[in-house]
Image (cartoon, rainbow, N blue to C red; front, side, top):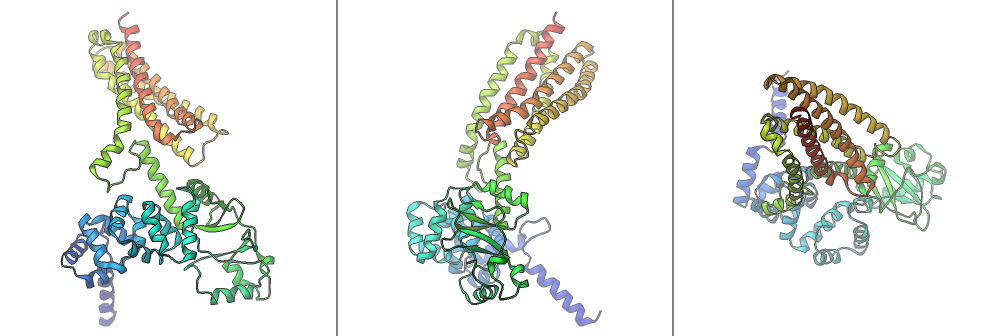
Length: 471
């Protein structure tokens, strides 16, 4: 390799490293954060425009989440019209509202006009009614109507997630007319892969992929090469159900239609990926009883969101304690029971959590339904029995050796088998019953499963000890 080639390669590597804001672990480099912080403090607008304003929206979103709150607001003010409002779709809701609340409505309206409709709706939907109407009033009539129509759909619906920018042509056009239209029309989406076919009332008739257009002769009519739309999505369909359709049929985009079958928008895979991630995170948070909590939430908001389910847990803890109180005399007689009780309850709780997590996720993804529920129940019952016998044997052997009492070992082994079987059944049946009752199993299951495994564990262990060891 020549010296010139070597110098060029080194230069490219240096340039690549300079523009890569991430470290090896995926976090933003500390030196870049320090430079941005210094530029904000020095009000170095030139540096911020050259090194921050040109970042990709996701990179800018990560940067906003990494800097201090006062730095965020100062950065947005310093960048002014150069601030990419799309970055606010990449941050926590608390950070988004913190920034938007400090921005003049005129600046938001000017930036909204440059966004895709789905990103614009994502930002507008969290604003209060007065600010939202003031911003919409400053937009062009057509864009204002499209955004208002999207905002009228239910929250977390496909209508809220869709883009209202799409390409649609009548069926009697030829391929040549369509290509000329795509070349001449200025108000087209920035990127698209499908063209929709509609009648004069905007009813969806079919769809054509761009590669199909490019392969056909100019004189061929659109109606002869269009195909039926694969799985059009109702605008009021829940976004999670729409994501499941994308997953099931491997879609890259899908038409969104109203109650009359008229085309109102298009849902694309990039938005669906966001939905899948959000729903997965929401299920995880709800299983832990933390609701819609975000890392950027304040101490007060975080505490308030956790209190309700902690209170429910406290009530169930008292129920478990009352079961122990029924066997107070037995525990006083055999102190070893107090030492071993947490093992029975803890193992049952863990087993129930495993089954519950699998069940809740299967319900969320529609893999579990009435047709296969009984088969899965039988499977979990078998797993509970096998694991109960396995760990019951292990714990019973250790307890019998530890306290030199084989009868105590038999008691805890039997209690372990009973509780792990009950845990498997509770982890399976409680989410199913809650789902059948129309309650979100991700929210309520954990509390009830824990309560059942604790009470069953204490009752079986202390009850067997009373009958077996004190007879």
